[in-house]
Image 1 (cartoon, rainbow, N blue to C red):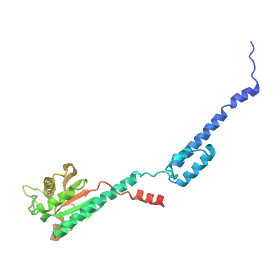
Image 2 (cartoon, rainbow, N blue to C red):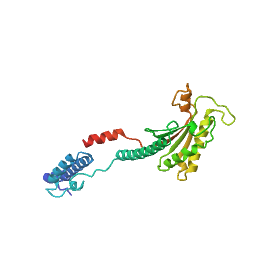
Image 3 (cartoon, rainbow, N blue to C red):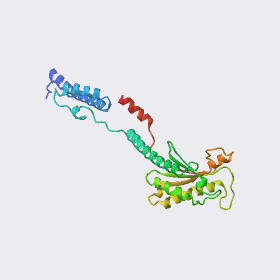
Length: 260
């Protein structure tokens, strides 16, 4: 039985039938990608212009999904970035550290202890520096009675914040060689540990897991060991309230540029 030949027009019609839905699909995909790109941009004026164009082209003046992109004024709600949140947390923490520093400075001034105590706020945190004579006898790690004036004040301030605390012991470069302290390493380390334990003992609100102690011996001097005055400055205990946050200057600069 002979096959019936198909006519030319029907074959052409069947072959081109896919073009219409294909072109519609490509148009919709293009619209989608342009929309996603527009949404990702921070220029809200361009987004608004894009919204109007697509509303006219695809919705014939009807409601568009662009209308739901932001509040009633047509602007997208701005949510803080991780960098913004980090800088806000840094500023809040910095204010707390400044408050602690102010209280410590008031105590120093009221008790005329400028020659024994000092503070310094840096990017690492708030440093409270205590000279040897305010805490220990020469060549010893046993706390003197005068330390009972300073310790409770420092402990009370540390209880008001949540940052980690590093207590470090420092000596001058004069060698020590005793049965208890074979070198300045042992002396500086024991002083840091003893003062840390004393702070924890006088204030039950202090969480031990926040604290650590370290001895640096003679190797982090802040003055010249060639003079007695310099060596006196180097014999010290430092209480560092370490920052939890760092300031992101690049993010702040970018934010300023976007706002302008």
